[in-house]
Length: 73
Image (cartoon, rainbow, N blue to C red; front, side, top):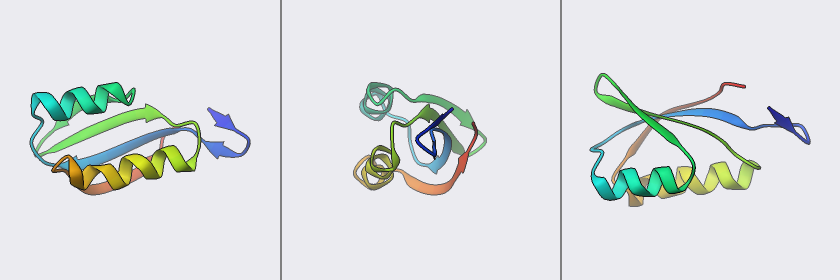
């Protein structure tokens, strides 16, 4: 879905351990989390670029390493 020219649906692939606290934080952000091999795939819609950037900056605090980001919608 596009809002004001911003593509809102993204898939973010990360490396790391999905603990209960990490899962809770990601689902609180409205993300679906699924394992894919050694990675975790996070999918969700973002209201704007600032919200996406907020997640990307929070990954380190959650103990997750960014692998890739791509638009899906």
